[in-house]
Length: 296
Image 1 (cartoon, rainbow, N blue to C red):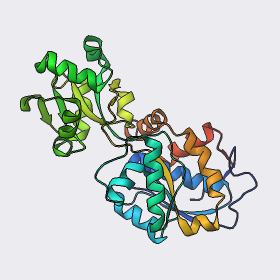
Image 2: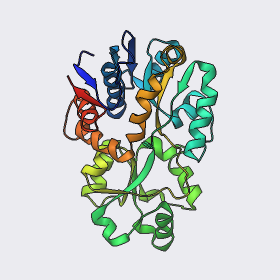
Image 3: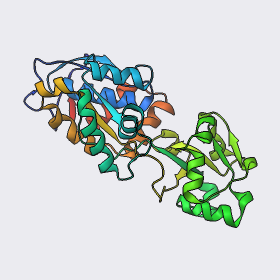
């Protein structure tokens, strides 16, 4: 990472001068942008930064952090708790979920810094146009509509979501719904957004809460008022030996995490996935706009 960037609100005094650090990420837009943000903040704080973002899948990025092949990335609390630490049942309270992951993952040589409110979890969404008729705000509203008018609640989902316990079957059970099989349509994720936005083939669709298409396609995300879906709050994870050597990393990344919201992620994800912008540019533009770093 060769950007000529200077400290803004973080990195003053170049606290990482002389450090050589590697950043990583998984291979989807949001996580790449978040990885680039870490790298640019480190760079502004004086470090030499090797960019190893965009690794295939969760496991390869995770292993890079555990083994010390990479020093930092943004990870998700639900992924840590369920996928890496092997728990079947998520913790409903976001703060307690983060704390449990932080405490248990220490034994693996991974340090979790405070989480953001950016929560990339499952949700159901409806087009604003259709919602003018139904006025749905929560998943409990959907359950009530399904009882009142079963034919009205049609839903588009991915194959995996249709069968997972933390997907549609579990959601129906949690909310007391029983949707007829004919009301459930399975399709690829990208098509779901278009179908919900532009057609009447499904009233509701499975979405990810931080996806840029939520805003771009004028969708209303329904509140999971019974907290069924796991929390997937983004938090920096650091190879613990790196953090022991450079504890000042926390002072650099904590302010960044405090600014990272679900709405901010929708905005920068849309710039990548809808407008076709480069993730590195999107990350840099956002950091400069928010005052964290300055162009050199």
